[in-house]
Image (cartoon, rainbow, N blue to C red; front, side, top):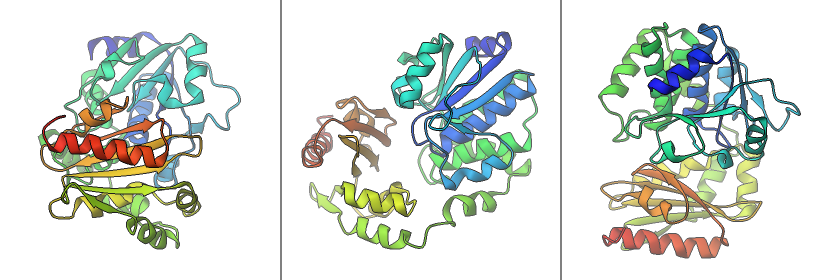
Length: 324
């Protein structure tokens, strides 16, 4: 933290970004860091690889976001901060532009191994439940009051990466922060409604079609569902969050690992794994160049969908047998 705080103090202009298709932890942490830097008198911009999802557009009421897809030129900056990721490759084509800028690359992240990424200055803590929690700690260290917008950003980070406090990473720090944030004026029901209760009319049908494709493997310990390109197109048209299929499958008695495989339009397969019990899915995806946490991790596999299904099924089987 010390080196990162010194970077914030010494530099005057910052560009904040995160991984492709930024999730709630990513954009929430960006909001919180944006307002921290503004409070310190810095020039700061948020530019993500992709436009923000509809579920998080309520953040735009108080925080400006830009997308590299629609920004031909980037604002001037001395430091690019990667939040909720640690590699320039995770920010798509924007990563090459950041590298070419010659700016300092910094990282704020809570994933295992993020201190070995592309950041020359890193604030990384894999024990933290969310990247937004790390930004909240920075406010305390710098003695900067947490304003309403930043509080909403931190809250979004926490609920996104703890599954609304259902997951095992919802620790004492998380509940203490959540209480503090609600006390500071965060409207939890408003945030929930914004994320989960503005679904497209076709989303129930898409969810039903996706769940119809699940398979139970390894004696019912692995629940696997695959989304091919035609179904993925339907998901995109309905603005459907494919992660919505994970929790119903993880709720099945006896399931220890859930695997969601999505065929990418540009080739390869995106794999997301979720675990119950003691299976370390981060160790599983590490075999394929992926990363994450013990109970939630992912990777992109340079394979066909059928090949990826076989590879992930075998790898999960080895983990279940104690070979991971």
